[in-house]
Length: 78
Image (cartoon, rainbow, N blue to C red; front, side, top):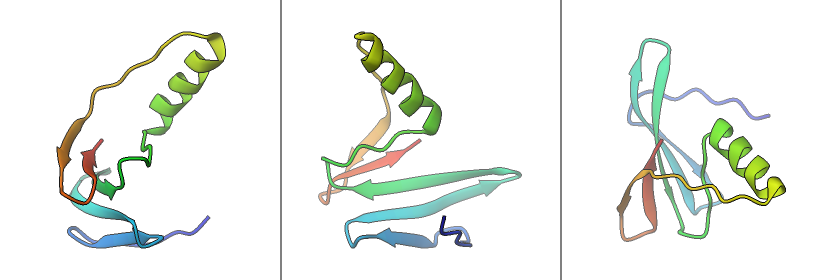
């Protein structure tokens, strides 16, 4: 696992196509913003786990996120 330190408004770039920005730091909570191509799925770990469990059980699972089109893909704040 790679561990990086970032301050508010700083970014991490993954494979030249995904940008993770530190939006806010409030106490022990960090708000991250993600810019990624539309075909890249981004989930919180607990959402991913429920989705995976639902698929294995043959049920459907849907989520609603605060998304905005940035022209480069989707800006997603979880």
